[in-house]
Length: 78
Image 1 (cartoon, helix red, strand yellow):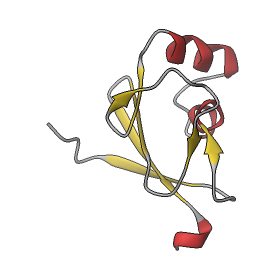
Image 2 (image 1 turned 90 degrees about the vertical axis):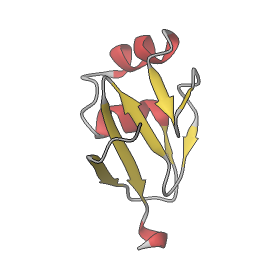
Image 3 (image 1 turned 45 degrees about the vertical axis):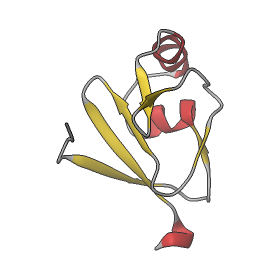
Image 4 (image 1 turned 135 degrees about the vertical axis):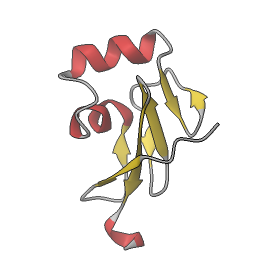
């Protein structure tokens, strides 16, 4: 089951950490909320639950939280 509404999130560098992305994409309000969602298994990276707040994300990776999915866009891939 795929979600046709994937929001693209451009980042400045070639990589962003999961906790940072959640804040950048407004999926959470702060780092505490990000850590809690990740710890409780409520965050999926590329369709798989990931419990690493420091997980490195690169161009094309997708993150899903609370039914919202975002995709990473990096400058090098533009």
